[in-house]
Length: 270
Image 1 (cartoon, rainbow, N blue to C red):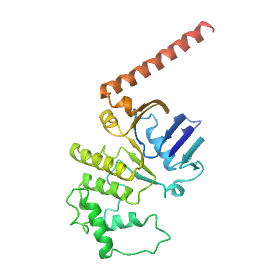
Image 2: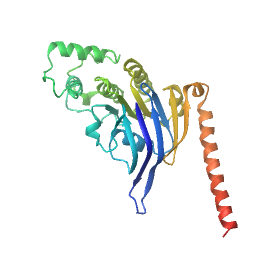
Image 3: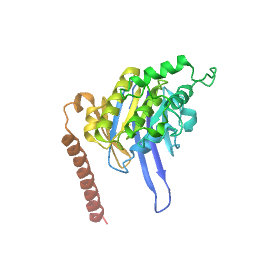
Image 4: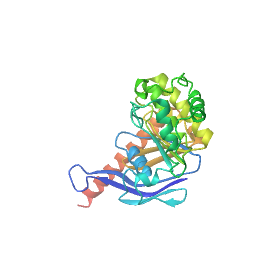
């Protein structure tokens, strides 16, 4: 479970470059929820994700995971609970190490108290079976370096590395945006498979309204650091991407109208 209460975050406060990235955001994500987040650039999507991961601490507000207040804990203190996949397929892996070595390191990440073991036959067989499920014909290439793979293959492996220890929380920061459509579709289907298989509480940022509708059981819409819509599955399954766009445009129109009304009132009583 993820709970964010009254999250506020400013970058470069008190300067001409001040950005109010989160403005009192409240989010409650239940165990096993798969939440997609959409919004324009600067709406606060990645800032919200970073606040969960602990990349930075909030100016004010709370972050709970599994009922534990982690608001003051940095990212490395949250790492046992959280796995993350970034937009760039080359982030999160070592290009000069083999597929097997990268997966092995990911597998040992939360096993600090367990005896360290090498890539023995038994463990290699386990990794080979995991890679086989990706259906990318990589199971017989475990000793190829990651740097020789395509972006889609590398991102699929990065996703596997993220879920191999069944984290409590999976954060996906536009993890298919840099891929060609075919590879993106494959990685999204793998994402859905792992989320359902391991019942992961998942937050996925996307710029694609269609992806936001096709994946997950909830869609959150953000604007100027605020949660402006939280659409449950029962509603979103009937929506089209045009419906989502219309929702967003109507909210922006109402915001502009409210500003105009406030300006008129201010002028009237000046």
